[in-house]
Amino acid sequence: LFNKRIKKSLVTIGDSVTSIGGGAFAYCSSLTNIEIPDSVTIIEVEAFYGCTSLSSIDIPDGVVYIGGSAFASCSGLTSIDIPEGVTSIGNYAFAYCTGLESLTIPANVTSIGNNALDGDHTNLSKLTIE
Image (cartoon, rainbow, N blue to C red; front, side, top):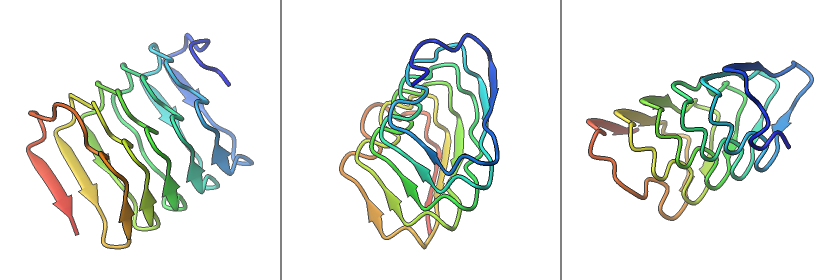
């Protein structure tokens, strides 16, 4: 959708949005922060793929599904706390997030896709799977 076109560092998504589409913000290298409303329930495949400057992400409690490669190659992310509502994490969802230091996956997650954490995660000092 906005693939490589966003030159802003902050994007705020409106409250009427319920799903962030596949590749919606892929390769938006200037994006450092995104505000996702509680109305979002699905983050689709490659939604934020390659957003290398994205430094933090606050995934709303209403999200139930994080698609494959949704945050892959987001090398600026340092910490991700997946909310209790998420039940499924797709393949390669957090692959190649080389700056990731902390990841928390709640007990409600019943499916973690193949290679969800593929790549170099030498900075990952805290991985919590409840």
